[in-house]
Figure 1 (cartoon, rainbow, N blue to C red):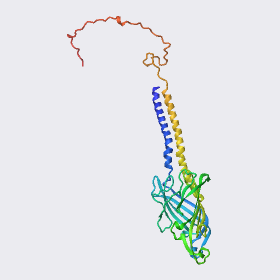
Figure 2: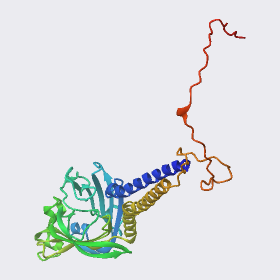
Figure 3: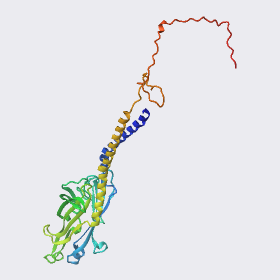
Figure 4: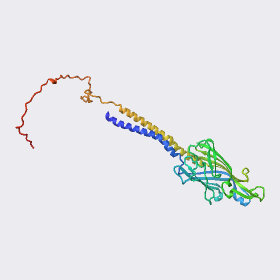
Length: 391
């Protein structure tokens, strides 16, 4: 039995050690891995498309002498977001190229607006970091202008909450709270709905563009006054709705109700420049849902599934090791011999030893003290020859 207890104890120690390791891993993996996953990926590359119909001012009509506003114009707003330098373990710089087109016209004639927005944000909170300061470019023939970004834009923080967040509007170049509205579902996914209202904003005070304040004859504007010059300002207003996956912060759906117009005062629109409602199309929504689910699945796997599996396996291994160790240590021992030496009495190999039936042989006691010493005569070896050694 002693020979078998060695391997059993070794296996028990291995199982206990393995169980302790698996239990430790079950505790440490969520703490270490989930924090690493809760960061905006550095290989971010997202294209969103929003579509709708609306009213658009024909800019050429102003030079022709009469402002004309086209109705039922098909519109497409496209945004391409990618990662640029500087980006590292803690921050990420995203660049968003955005265009708005009327699809009933070809080439540049259909382009209404084009913007390149660059901002550096924290990879966890998605809030801007002013190192470096962001920039916005609205005119291709002029360099981008440095603009301090102070709110969310393209992504919400991980574990978004039912509260208001600061949101940066690139047209107004200002930040205003976007308010939580409700918890709802889009295509079976739980999302948080946020809403923001912007403006009216005097764009001539935001961007020094000649089109943001124009002086034209009253007749061209379509107002009373004939040829008398009338100066009008371009105003901007927007109602923004955003639906966000609260786990990953991915914007599942977005919608903007854009309104730009010329007017002498903000409260009295006179000539429409752009008026349209532009929601994400279905392909974009499905793609964003897929991105959100992939991120949520990774967080769930390393935050719950893997730790639970490791915990169960670790507990089983630990219990098995303890059981095997206790069972191996309490096995039967070799019986001690009657003579106290621990050696079993000899006997037939096929018959068990039964001390109860053995007869005891009595030996007479000998008194060694009464013995006398026998003397032997001394032998003189001096005259004897030594023995001869034979080779």
